[in-house]
Amino acid sequence: MTTLRKFLEKSNIDADIAYDEPMSRHTSLRIGGPADALVCPRTTMALAGLIQAAHGRAFPVTVIGGGANLLVADAGIRGIVLCTSSIRFMDEPLAIHDGLRLVRAGAGVQVNELVAYALERGLSGLEFAAGLPGSIGGAVYMNARCYEREMADALVTVDYVMPNANMGQIDDQEHCSTGYPEAGTASSGTDQDNVQSYDMIRDDWAYKQTPFMPTGYLSGAIIMAGSFVLLPGDRPAIAARMADHQADRRAKGHFDWPSAGSLFKNDRRFGRPTGMILDELGFRGRRIGDAMVSPKHANIFVNAGSASARDMLALIHEAQQAARQHFGIELEPEVVLLGDFTG
Ligand SMILES: Cc1cc2nc3c(=O)[nH]c(=O)nc-3n(C[C@H](O)[C@H](O)[C@H](O)COP(=O)(O)OP(=O)(O)OC[C@H]3O[C@@H](n4cnc5c(N)ncnc54)[C@H](O)[C@@H]3O)c2cc1C
Image 1 (cartoon, helix red, strand yellow):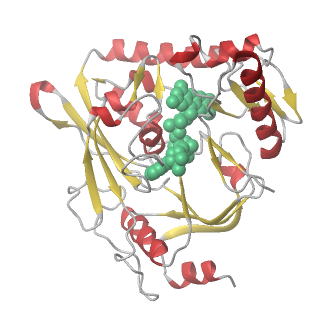
Image 2 (cartoon, protein in one colour):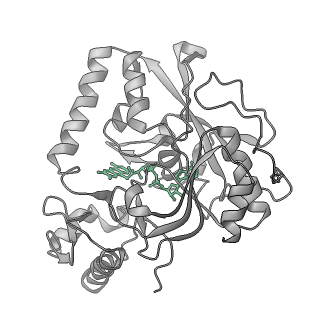
C-alpha cells in the first residue's frame, strides 16, 4: 500500500476517495490520466483539515472545481486531487446597505446554481454568468469573465484556507476538524480556526488575474466560499438577460463538443480577439488526432472523440507557433494545465 493511501485510510477523513481515478471523468474536455487519489471531502471541516494534514506530510495537493478549465496530462496527477464538489452551502440573502443583498455560496456550488438561486429571489448582478460551466471556487480563482463582466464585479469577500504545516495535523485515529460551517447547514460566520476571509480589493483583480493565482499573494489558498453583492430587480427582465446569454452560448457551439471554453486568453495589445487571429491563421477545424479546433469558433479547442492531452498540447503549440511566426505575438493559454506533460 502506498504511503499516501495509508495516510488517507488511517486518517478517517469524511470524504469520498477514489484511487487511480481517471481525470477524464472530471474534466469538461474529457481528457486526463489517473489521479493517485481523488478526494472529495463531504464537509468543509473535513476539507480544511485534510489540506492542513496533507501539507504537514508534504503530500502534493491539486485543487479542482468543476474541471471546466483544465487540461490534465495523460500521465495524470500525482498526490491528492482535492475536489470541492460537496462544499455546497448557500446562505439566505443578507440585507446590507442601500437595498443591496449579500449572498454567500460554497466553493462547490455550480455557478449556474447560484445564478438560478439569484433569479428565484429576483436578485440582479449575476446575469452575465448564466450558462458559465464550473464551480464558484473555480470562477473566483479564474475571475471568470463573459459579456463584459467578471466575477470580481460582484464579489465582496472570499473565504479561504491557507495550508500551514503547523495546523490541523490529523491524528491517525481521528476525523479532520476545523470548525467551519458544515456543508448544507446555515453558516455561522468565518471566524473559525483555519478559515480566513479576504475582502475585495479591486486592484488585486484584472482580466484573468486574481490574488489566488500562482503570482498572487494568496497563492496556494483553497477557496471555500465567495460572497456576492446583488441588487433586487425585475425578475422577468433578469430572466430574459440570462436566457439571452444562454442562447448566445448555444449559438456559438459552446456545448457541441467537450471543451474547456476559450483555449487562449484575449489580449488587448493584439487589437482583436484571439479567435479572430486563429481564424486568420486558418485554424478553424484544424485537427491533430481527436484534438480539434472547433469549426464554429477558432479559440475553442474540442475533444472530437478520444483526444489525448498530448494531441491537445501539440495543437496548442502549433497555434502558438503560427501566431508567433505570422504576427510576432505570444498566445497565452487560459486553460490550466495540470499534471506532468514531459513524458
Ligand atoms: C463550454 C464552456 C464555456 C466557457 N465559457 C467561459 C467564459 O465565457 N468565460 C470564462 O471565464 N470561462 C469560461 N469557461 C471556462 C470555465 O467555465 C471557467 O474558467 C470556470 O470558472 C472554471 O471553473 P471550475 O470550477 O470548472 O474550475 P476548474 O477548471 O476545476 O479549475 C480552474 C482553476 O481553478 C482552481 N480552483 C478551482 N477551485 C478552486 C478552489 N476552491 N480553491 C482554489 N483554487 C481552485 C484550479 O486549481 C484551477 O487552477 C468555459 C468553459 C466551458 C467548458
